Amino acid sequence: MLHIRPFCNFDPPAVAAIWQRCAGQPGLTQPVSVDLFERLVFGKLYFPESGFFLAFDGDQPVGFAHAGFGPRRDRKWISTETGIVCMLLVCPDSREPDTIALDLLRRCEEFLAGRGACRLLGGCAPPDVPFYAGLYGGSMPPGILATDRFALSAFAAAGYEGSDRTLIFRRGLMDFRPLIDRRTMQIRRTMHFNTIVDPPPRDWWEAATIGEFDLTRFELAPPEAERPAASLTVRDMGPPAPDLPGPAAGILDLFVDPALRRQGLATFLLGEAFKQLMNQGVGSVEAHLSASDRASAALCNKLGLRQAAEAVRFRKDG
Image 1: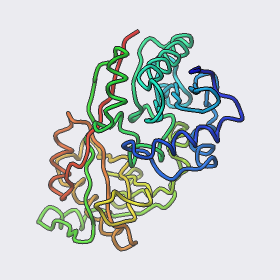
Image 2: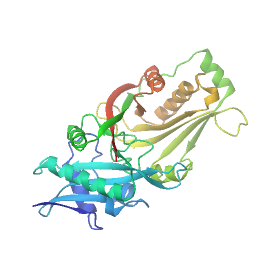
Image 3: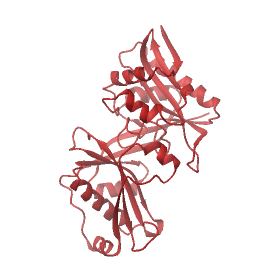
């Protein structure tokens, strides 16, 4: 008999088993362990046990769904205004998978509404990534991957609509050569390129969501400047996509001072960072960007990154 119940402290092995049974589903990091889930999901200070639901067929775990919340505007704690269905997973060999998925989504929505959420998101994507960084979607969870037909149809059947798309760009670094022109030479003369290994978190939310990873921050700064003119943060992703050399690095954020944009700083910074990563043995890089961000897409293409995948972010108003 199929039934659903909230998370219990003895459930992590069942969650890991469900994940492993879904090994063919797009975007899932494999293999996984109970310890990995403890570090990246269950051990978070804001993990809501009452918002995590498991589905069983008799005594056999066959699926789970996880509801959570994104950050407050000050990024010092979670905000319950917007609820997120962070993960929906149903074993492909289970009985009535569509029914299980809809029941799991309903339980998540009831939990989120009970906490005051008036807007629901389907799938984690920055900045709303309280869980599953390092477990789903590459450098960061990008929403629901477009190749995950089951999850897409489940959210659509539950009344969610696509609100945004994430484009995933990748390239190998073995043949990378930075662009050299008059502007990059000028930047090299006037800016210092700095590398910060394991940089301190910039706020509580950053510490809570990506503090577990090996991070490197690259910065461009004028001499004696108090703040960088541009910065780039990447994380070690471990094994890359099957068609690229490894290990891989994922771009988490790229910032350029608004007063200094359109002067080639982003191109120069990325080129120098790629060179250093390549010298450290990194074989490929990955970047995620909104489909509406044409400037970043043009920058990726300029540096030889090509779109490799796409994801959808769902939304449902309460």
